[in-house]
Every structure is written in C-alpha cells, then in structure tokens.
Amino acid sequence: MSFGKRKFVWQQLQLSSSEKNLTMCVGSRESCRRGPAPFDIAWVLSLIGAAPLLAQYNSGIRGVVSDSGGAVVPEATVTLKNVATGLASQVKTSQSGSFDFQRLAPGDYTIGVRATGFASYSSRPTLLTEQTLNLPVTLAVGSDTQTVSVDTVAPLLDSADSRLQTTLPQNQIDALPVQGRSVIGLANLAPGVTDTGLATTSGIPDNFNVETTNQANANGRGFDGNLYIIDGLDITSSVRPGVVNTAPNSDSVQEVALQTNTYSVEYGRATSIQTAITTKSGGNRVHGLASYYYTGNRLWARNEFTPARGYSPFHYNNFSGAIGGPIYRNHTFFFASTQFLRSLSTTSGSTTFESPEMVNFLKQRFPNSIGTSLLSTYPVLRATVTGVSRTAQQVFGANCGTAATFNIPCTLPVIDAGTYSLSPFRNGTQWSIRVDQNFKNERIYASYYNSVLNTLNAAVRSGFDLPNRQTSRSFQVSETHTFSPRLLNEAKFGYLPIEGLSGETGPFNIPIINIAGQGTNIGASPAHQDFIRLCCIKWLKPSLLMVR
Image (cartoon, rainbow, N blue to C red; front, side, top):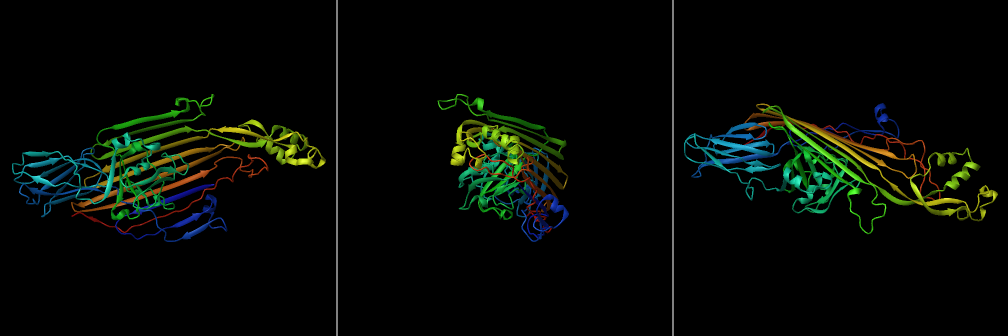
C-alpha cells in the first residue's frame, strides 16, 4: 500500500492568475508508464487548483523623511544595507518625502539618510518575517559631514501593519521546549489559538513525517483552515487541508511568523492560522552549529511500579548540524543543514497462537500440507508462553480422539496464550541546502529540502516484519529583478513531491490467512504499489509590483 502526491508550480509573481493543470494518473507506476488500462488507471484532464507559490519575502521598510519642524524632505538619498550579506539598496524620497523598500529578507539592517543642508541620519532596525516596518526619519539641520545615530526601538504598535502576528526569532525557537524539534507546533503560542497541539499520522511529532497535522485553530475555524509557508513556498497539502508536507529542521529556521487575522491578499487560503517560516541564509561570515539530543530507558529513574527487569528498551538519538557562509563575499552565500534521527520504541501486549505441540502433530499427520509448511516456516518466536489457551477437547469437543479429527488427543494443547514485546525502529534523515546570489539589480534564491523516514511494522510471527519508507522533496527557486527604485518583478518556480510506501519488502506471495480461534494469523498485506495522487502545473500571468 502506498500514497503519493506531487505539486509542480510555476509563478510569475503572485497577483493575478491564469491556471492550467496537466494530467492526474491513478494506478501503479508500471500502469502509468504504459498508458490507460481498464480498472487500474484513469487519465484526467481538468482544471483543478494547485497550491500557489507566494513571494519569497514579504517584509518591507517604509517611512517619511521630515525636518525638525515637520516639513517633508523630498529628494533625500536613503540607503538600506543588510548587515549579514552587505547587500545595499538606494532610493530617493518622493515629493511627499516618503520611501519604501519591499521584498526584504528579515534580519538586521542599517539605514542612512542624506540631504543637502541636513546632518546625515543613521539607524539599525531589525526587520521580522512578514513585517512592514514604519520608520519615520527626522533630520536635524547641519552639515552633511555630521551624523546623527538613532537607536531603533520596535514600537508597541506598528502603524504600518494591521495584522495580528507573533514572530519567534531563532533565539526563542532554541529556548522553547519544541516538541519533536518541529517548529510546526509553535502555532500554539500565538494569541487566540486553541486546541490540543501537534499531532501526526503516526502519533510521533518530528520533522520526518510527510504528512503532519497540527491540532490548533483560531478564528472559530478548524485546523483544516491552517496554511504553512517556507520562504514563499506553500507546503500545505492540496489533498488534505491543514496538513503539512515538509517540516524543516529547526536549526535551519531563522524565524517563524504566526498570523491569525487580516492576512495579505496572497494568503487568502488561510482562514485559521497562517505560519510563515523563513529559513536561514549565509552571510559574509562563516557560522554554524551542532546539537545532539538523547534519551533512553537506561536514563529513566525506577519507582515502586517498575518491573524488576527494568523498562522496556527504547532510545532516541537526534543529531543536527548546520553551516553557512560566503561563496563570493557580498554576492553569493550558502547555508546547509542536516538532521539524523535514530530511534527505537517497544510495544508490548498479549496474544494467542498455535502451540508447538499442535505444530508437531500436524507435521506427523500432514507433513506435506500447505498449512503445515507455513506454520513450520514462519513460527511464532517473539512471544513468551504464559499458559494453554485451548486444548483439543475445548476446540473439537466430543469429536477429539476420533477419526473425524484424525485422532487428535483430547489433552493436546492446540492454542497457547502469551505475551510479546516488539521493538521497531524509526529512523529519519533530512538535509537542506540554500544558495543566494545577489547582483546589482537582481536577486536569485534557490533551496532544497530532502526528508526520508524509514519505519518498521514488527510482527509477532517471524518473517513478516514489513519496512516502510516515506520521502518528501521540496525545491524552489526565485528571481527578483529591480527595474527602478519603484518597479520590480519576481518570478518563482516550486516543486514538492511526497511519497509513502508501506511494505517495501516481505513475503507478499502469502496472502493474509485468518486462523480460527487465535489472535496471531499468518500472511502479509499485498505488495506495495506506487500511486500518484496528483500532478499539477500552474502558470500565472506576468505581473509587476509598483512601489510607491
């Protein structure tokens, strides 16, 4: 059994759209290759919505330059510089004294203002994800060789933005007890958010599930109204609303912005919580980090109720590392991260199964039967016998010991009772790479996330352990071109396929056979097939952004 989904999105900015989608193929990989066939494949050509690709950065800084008397200062030169990358932009104030910088990455900036007859002005604001910062500038009369430095303090109320937003920078993400090291669950920290919190299809919160559900909601809407974005790429499932298809390593995340009201137009799909994630980029200085989290049964303290043998085996090993820096100073930067999960947990229970005495009886009376061969080849070895559940007398009644039951002894144990303790593994690997290239009037960005999760469905009967595999690959690239201080264009491309295979290997030639009277049966689910849920291509009409 398997599931899969592919998003294939092309965007020329994000303001108005004309959409076209290609084919949807349902069936096995082999049947999709050979073309339509009855009952196992359907080719569909239709107009169906694809998840949109949004602007990479939606932050901005705007303001009005005025003198100490309140009169506006036109034609002042405003220079904005990113502290980490050294990328600088310069504009002239309009006749109304206003300036506006759009499509900015969150981070620390320096802003300088120069005008004839006034002392130079400089400040160092910090811009957050999805923030439009209003920064009024007051120039003092003096020589342009003089500089007035202003310590920028975030206002209690941002008059340039009406959204209800909570922004969590990297230091807060590191300090918070993030469940499973997944930033998806941070949505519960926003004001007005209710419900139980992070959950997944497997019940284990981490960064490796290809489908993660966060049971959080706002505005009276359920979690299916939530929207999740990484650097402008919509990572919300287009098949299951509110479900996330890629969960980034928290060490690769710079900021998380949580919005619960008055979203911008391009986030119209979100009616509950919109989570915008900004990943880290490289800078002019090499920087990195490494972390390791471990827990296991040997670290847990015992109490009066702990079994004498101790706790059942389990362990959790989570390693993460990241590094970023310049490729070409002030122009080209990289940032890469990786995360490894190696874990094991124990599941215990009780069951019933055929007794060894019954198997020996079958070998003597029916040595060549299929049933005897299966029970002999795939015995129950992972259960500890605690007693006899049913004898031949209890199973066959008065017919035991007669020719009708092949003279099976009435006292022969037929079904045993026992307990089992299984320890399946859960191993995940994720890595990412991001590259930023800055030219004079152009910015190019590309990123890629690759996640693989391997799990095991352990069985009490030997030979029927079924390994599973989930994969998620997220790729996007964008190009932002500035034609003038008041005109820019952004083009983007994104691709997000996910796939899940249940039962990669196993004795699939043996169908599931129920054995009457006992809990442990024999056989495996059908061999996996690779299904494609959806393939979409989306074009949007070219559009330009006018900056006032």
